[in-house]
Image 1 (tube, rainbow, N blue to C red):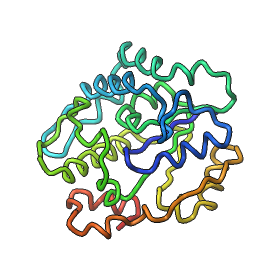
Image 2: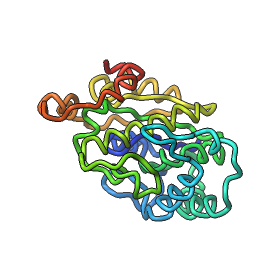
Image 3: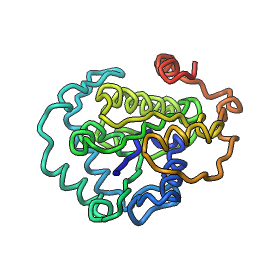
Length: 237
């Protein structure tokens, strides 16, 4: 079994990475405190390559069609293989990796690894945009979007882009969506779902409930109207 985690940074994906590691799944090496596979530079550069095949239509619209069928460049494949060296060379029966930037490469990761077990990890965008993440500024990964000095608007655009990209790409054969809030508040139920998905017994790690609903303590941070549909889509409305 091989797996990866799809989900925007600051969505609490470390919880599933730590769960898998403590359950005997080899998540590559070395890992940082968030359970991300390091070093990340090859993955970052792969993100910039795929971005060239996702034209910006202006506003908050991107063309996600071409990237689904265009030939994947050899340079992209080489970078992903370099990044995943420890995982691909491992003879562990259960292995995978986690780094949020995988989400930016999802269309081509799905095509290169169609048999992976994909976990789509979602967090309420109102909480997700509170904290800083490397993907806040999509320009750093070659993705065009409306320029703004409003950091929370910038993070909201990043959240929308990644959610739209995942939706446009569709689901592979092995796919499960887990909301961070459900994992925190109903851990046993969600672990049973994940155990059925993986066919493995999973460890129970300590989780904190206070990260859920943090946006309620930040009334000055307003979620843009363009994320209203996403709130409905992921049952946060």
